Length: 186
Image 1 (tube, rainbow, N blue to C red):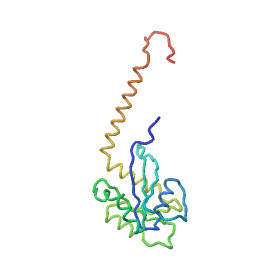
Image 2 (tube, rainbow, N blue to C red; image 1 turned 60 degrees about the horizontal axis):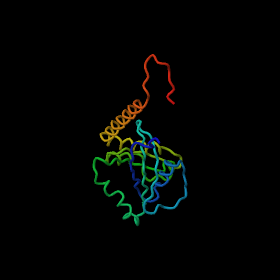
Image 3 (cartoon, one colour; image 1 turned 90 degrees about the vertical axis):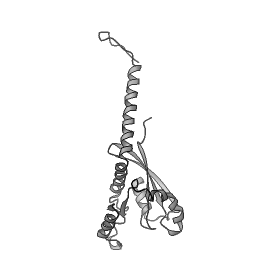
Image 4 (cartoon, helix red, strand yellow; image 1 turned 45 degrees about the vertical axis):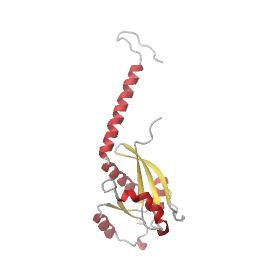
C-alpha cells in the first residue's frame, strides 16, 4: 500500500470569537460553508493532505475556541508553540473580506500589523472561497522551508529505500543468457 503522505504538520487557528476560524477550516478541508454554526467549545481539528513542491503534506488543523471562557483549555494546545522562535511559522488572516460594509480592520492596517510581526497577510472569505487555499498553502510552504534540512534528510532516506527496493526486485528476477530464447517469468 502506498504511503498517503510524506510529512505531518499541525497548524493552529487562533483568533477572537466570531471571526470565522471554523468557517475557514470547513471551507479548506471540506469545501463547505455553513453561515450558521455553533461556537467551538474547547478545541476541534480536521485533516487535509496537500502537495507542495512534490511533498505530500498531511495537515492537522486545530480550531481553537475564541471565547475567553475557553482560553485556559486552548492555551495548553499552543503553549509550546509560542516559545519556539524559529520553528513556528505564522501568517495573519483577515477573514470575511466579502463583507466590506462590516469591515472592522482596513487592509493597510492588516498589512502593517503583519509587517510588524514579520508575517504574510491574507484577506480571505470562507463564504466566497477567496484566498482560502492560497493562505493555507502559503503557511504550509513556510513550515516546509523552516524544516528544509529535516526534509532533505527524509528525501535522501526515501531515495535510498527506493533504490534498495529496486535492487531487491532485480535480484529476484531469474537471469537469462543474452542468446537464449525469451522465457516467461510468471
